[in-house]
Image 1 (cartoon, rainbow, N blue to C red):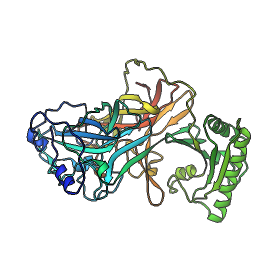
Image 2: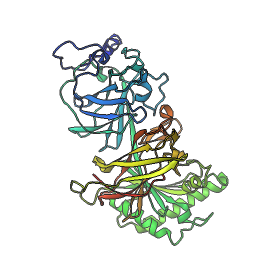
Image 3: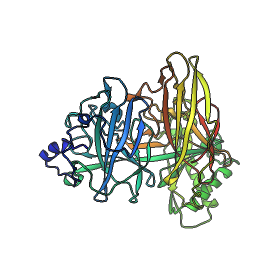
Image 4: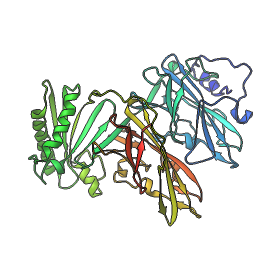
Length: 494
């Protein structure tokens, strides 16, 4: 068991420590001193980027009913003498300067649709393990382990289990939370100013005819209606097809607790402000009038605005990006569920969930390993990619998707789930990070850039496991899954 030397630094700075459970015998000062360590793992996974890096949760304690102490054991199970860990475990959604923090350890609070990360104290990026301060070193030797920690907010609802997320591998599900004091010394976030670091999880979906796309953050729905469907070029008069598109939006508003609905018109970068600004406003007003007539309940007030081309969602450098930016956005509180959640059942064994393609002439294989339903209508898709060829190759089709420019970094975004019955397509989830100007979006999926820039590079015979988070409809138990260039597969939801 690990007693962290970090407590000395925090005590010197005037920061208190959380209550702890005393160890039966004096613990070593570093996990490396005890080899692989003896603490049983609550959950484990493998790094997508570095296959010999094993990641295990060895402690998860809720303290004072509002904080969580996560302890992660990192082990080098291979023969590589210089296996680095700080770049792998760092949070890529915020600037850190020097890479030496275990700041990427987090919790998926599915019910609240948030990604919880370690607190940020005033003097450092993260209330978590620091390579220099804690004497952990930059590398893990073969057969050795280190244990790192993070102090972060506890997930909402006082759950008995939670999902642990790291930057390196698929999330670890159903990790049990212990309400006893943790073993070891950890800084108390109540004794110094700290800032919670949370990322709102946005779950997009769209109709197969591209007439609208919806983003669900667990609190509000943002429905982007395609101006190409609603209006003729340069006009603000609704087309005959617009009524069917607006009818669905009106039903969603009727089913929501909304008292205020925001309608905003947007344009692409073509033309100029003198044209785009008044046109986007007139289009928003046309949609507002149509929705008012379609609603079946009273007491709803509208706020209407035209933003011209000032708030693009996608790059205007492509025709597809411009098409998506030409929109009228309707935003309102999320509707309440009208159907009970499906009864938990054991789905039939999935077979044949594989596909093949080629990259640079080499055969590439794919296998779906699971599509699991999580709380809050979330879904976790996991799949493996293998180079079955005889030479090293790059498989870049995982990020080559129509909306890849909407993300801060390249990631495994070229994945879609489709509900054939409702003709609706579900896109990978996004983490929203506010910035000084607006917001950046990161994929809630495997990164393929940044410190993991070689994730799409495969040696002969090498296999890597990837993951994506999606919204899942509650009306079906199977979905069509399309991963890059591989064949469509009908996948049961577990």
